[in-house]
Length: 238
Image (tube, rainbow, N blue to C red; front, side):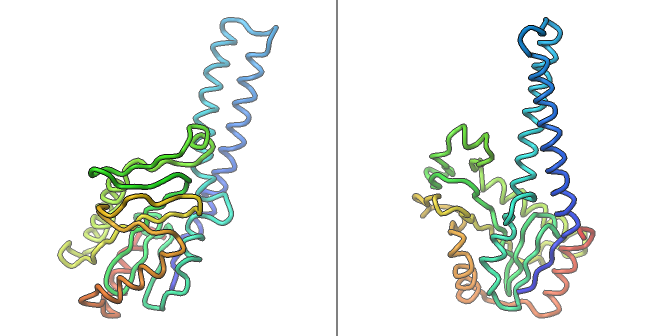
């Protein structure tokens, strides 16, 4: 498997996550100082609440960037490790296309939609459900899925739009196959038999992709088509 990674963007956002973390801590400490007993008045209390709110917002943004770029291993590294044994006809794009992660196979584009917190994932009555994630865990950075279908549709539209701008009309664009990927061992898969796209654990990702591309691939890309798609996906993103 080949990997095309935008290391410059990753390094930049890793530094940004550190800056946001220290900025949020400074603002929160300043807000606590303004509210210190014996020194507080009406104005100081107001400024304290404003500082604490700003600090809270910065903390949430910091958690978002840290979870994706500051932790080791990063999400993209976990996915990359799981699929690294795929054959050379696969190309794994990391922050080098319109979406964070994308896998180009012999006959389709795989679009991973990641689940990065515990709980249970199911698809009931036409809606995705994610249960078992407490408010405290969400505050600490464990994200509850909102609408994977919407996320997949928006990401697919971004890819199609970008390919179109690079001269590949929609009728010539590769199929985009979303796939919901469970990263944590303590995340359970509930009833997903009617889900609009596959749901797999990270350990089953390589096996599932390889099986699908072997059994449900009517026409494979030529080397020229693969090169054209690769160049179009990364144009202006590296």
